[in-house]
Picture 1 (cartoon, rainbow, N blue to C red):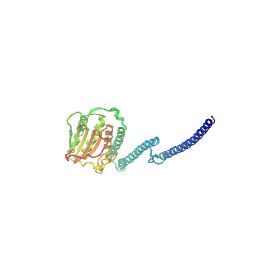
Picture 2 (tube, helix red, strand yellow):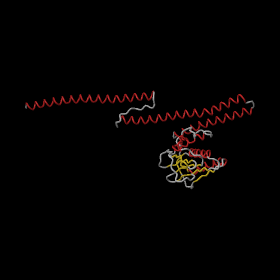
Picture 3 (cartoon, rainbow, N blue to C red):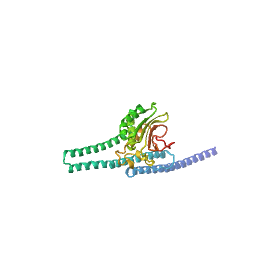
Picture 4 (spheres, one colour):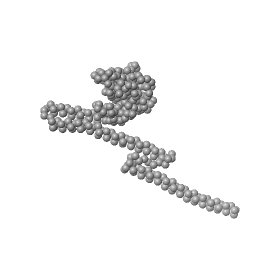
Length: 325
C-alpha cells in the first residue's frame, strides 16, 4: 500500500506541474496571438484613417493568408477599388461638364455684351435674343441628356419594361429620319425578314438608342452614301445593328467614344454634346444587350444584340468579306 500511495502522490504532483506548464504556455500563446491580431487590427485601422483623411488610393494591408480577416480585407479592398473608380469618373465628368459648358456660356455672354454695345434697332436686339435662346436651349439639352443617362444607369426605368417588337421601334425610327436622309442625299434602309423580334424593354429608351445611332450615321455619312438599320431576330442574336458608309470610328477610339463628352477629332466642329453614345451604352446595359463597334468596310457598324457574350464588349470581330454592312 505504501508504494501505491507514493505512486499516487507522484502522479498528482506530475499532473499539477504539467497543468501549470500547459496553463503558462497557453496564456503566453494567447498573448502572442492576441498581440499579433491586435497589431493587424491597428494597422487596418491606421490604413482606414489614411483613406478617410488623405488618400483614397490607400488599401488595407493583408497577411497573404486565407483567414477570415484576410477574406474580409480582400472584399473591402475591392469595394475601395470601385469607390476610387467612381470618384475618378465623377471628377472626370465634372471637369468635362465645366470644359464643355464654358464654350456655349462664353458665346452666350459675348453675344449679349455685343448686343448691348452695338445693337441699335429692335431687329438687332431680337437677333441677339434669338441667339441667346438657342445657346440656352443647347445647354439645357446637355443637362437633360446627363440626367437621362443617370436615370438609365440607376435602373429606375426597369420597372416599366414591357414586351415589345423591335420591328415596330425600328420602323418608327426609319419613318422619323427618312426626311433628313433624303435632304442629305443618303439612302436609309430598314432590313429584316418581318419575323417577330420580341424583347422585354422600355420602348422610348430603345427608340432613343436606335435614333442616336441612326442620327450619327446620317450625320457623318457623305451625300450618296447608305445607312442600313437591320433587325436581328435569330434565336441566338436578338437585337439590331446600324451600318453606314461614313468614315467609321478608329479602333483606338472605340472605347473612348462611349465616355461622356468625348468627341472624335473629326467631329469637333459638328453640332452635338458627345453624350449620344454614352446614352446608347447605358440603354444597352439596362436591357442586357451586347454593344459592339466594328468596321463595316467602308464605314462603321454598331450592333446591339442579346446573346451569351458580356454586357459591353468593344472587341472588333473580323469580317468574312469586305461587303457593305
